[in-house]
Image 1 (spheres, rainbow, N blue to C red):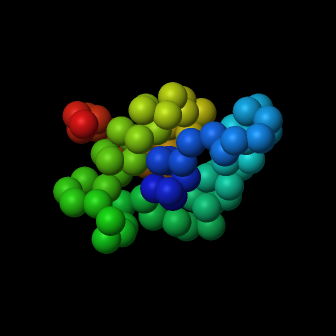
Image 2 (cartoon, one colour):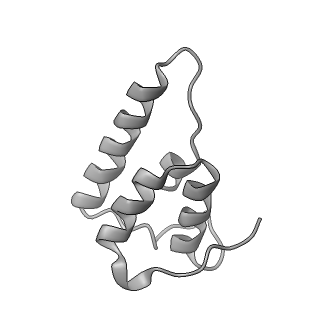
Length: 80
């Protein structure tokens, strides 16, 4: 999940198709039980780190999906 959050548009790909494909994959992973709080890459609050990267990449669509699955954990975004 964090890799999708940090990923930027690949060159040569249609931006609209890219955004929809990554949103679909992100949503599917959450539906299947992927936990954005787990992982060894991040120190501290992994969920907050994911929100930070989604904001950096201007992925409000993915932030909304994340909020749907983890509404009780909405919190502050760490600064870079």
